[in-house]
Length: 304
Length: 285
Image (tube, each protein chain N blue to C red):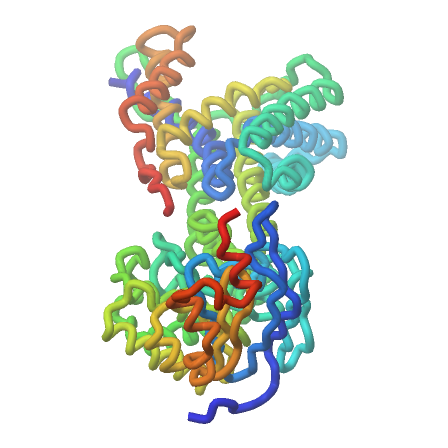
């Protein structure tokens, strides 16, 4: 029982990180029908900007943890969103009217480019960071097993919930959110009622990158080591999560992320750690066979 | 009703030509639409009517020609040089489609509010004031909701405001599409077959709505329509296209009796009597 609970907590934490990245995939797919394969790299850059900010803060001698965390969060959100904006502006917008395959290949190219760019600038070795937040609650003591809920896990879950609330409000209540949904349903018609489609797409990339950067910060705090390659695996997992939840559906992305996190954590706990990625992808294959629209996705009705 | 309320031109189309490869969809068409008038564009299928609309709203860039919108307060706009989304935003031209293009997964009210996106976007400081609920934004949003409610009232859909637009009946969707176009506050409203698929009662309601829009809003309406009772009943001015060319242009009475129009719609008994340019078009290559 205790062991199960512990895996549940670990899996949920991991799921939050995947969910935040998955929203970027699902939003971009919803609006321009393209899988932005470079989104995992945006997440990785978010993690790198976080650690650079942390080290800079250490240099100027600011050691108070809550303030340091806040500065890291804001810096990485701001700078990573600039990367997201630039990615769309430079690599995808010129290809807006070309065949889908061209955009897809460009996305893969940008992914490789960003990986190599970080490897070149930051070096190939892993970057360790000492834990910023330690300690936590002991929830349960069953025999010789102790269930821990660390402060860090609480922070990750709370921050994700807050971001989700703000994000949902933005999509449902603001002019940008309405324009975003309108573009998702009919790009041409949205332009005809005066929505600046290019700007809406730009803002979509910026929003996705902002959420991914927070995931990057959480990954850094949770694992304590990052390298230029973390974006690949996390990106593929988050993409799996987006497909599992139903690509194009925002609650689906969060649900999918949570499920992938839980599957991974339970699989490593009860079966083998080596095959946890296989488990996640098996789920993806099964979903694609039996429910191609995902858990919360709507079937794509061909427009006449 | 008086045919000419004002004589101010709202739209001037000069030598409009649109070629798709070897196909000439529109061939040197010129006409004017006046302010506060309903101008109908009619013609057999494939005459190039919708292509004219697509050129006006930035979907196509015309091969040749000039499309000038004389905005009553903001001066002239050359539509053929403008980006697609600039045309509704600045030149204030709105349109509807032959096949309805609402946002089916948004509510009826939201369909009308999103049409006022630009005012709201400016008022919301590009989203951020909106998130923290600043007063200026709230006021702008109230204005937008008021305008949306006003139009819901006029098309009689107030009770269905919270429905998904996709769940409305066909006739209601058509009227909602017109209301949405009106919410962008256009000076020229382009309607592509608004009466298609409507029953006689809905069609009569539509006539009333269009006449009311012309009277109350003081804007110009450009109308593509096949239903002759709609066209003859409400238009002030009719332009007839056939095979991409203008064959007639005038008041409904004039067009109704024009032999070129009768020939295009009903055909000619003896081919020898066709004018040479029509005969050339009809001859198989």
